[in-house]
Length: 84
Image (cartoon, rainbow, N blue to C red):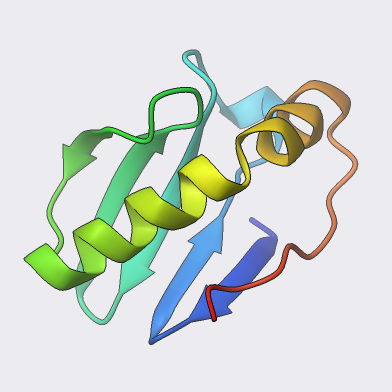
């Protein structure tokens, strides 16, 4: 599972397609916490994150929606910019 970005202790990852399922989503890892976020809406689909990490991850997903959708569709992974 390639890491797409890292910021404020949060690692954003996406699995390879053969092991994935719809809707298009990313995984956020923050310490022992793990959550899955919808690429189109930025909403947490499952998992658990502290409130601050949840807000930062949602902000990041919404800032990179088009790029994440392209990565999901093409499976050409690249690093995306972190939050400032």
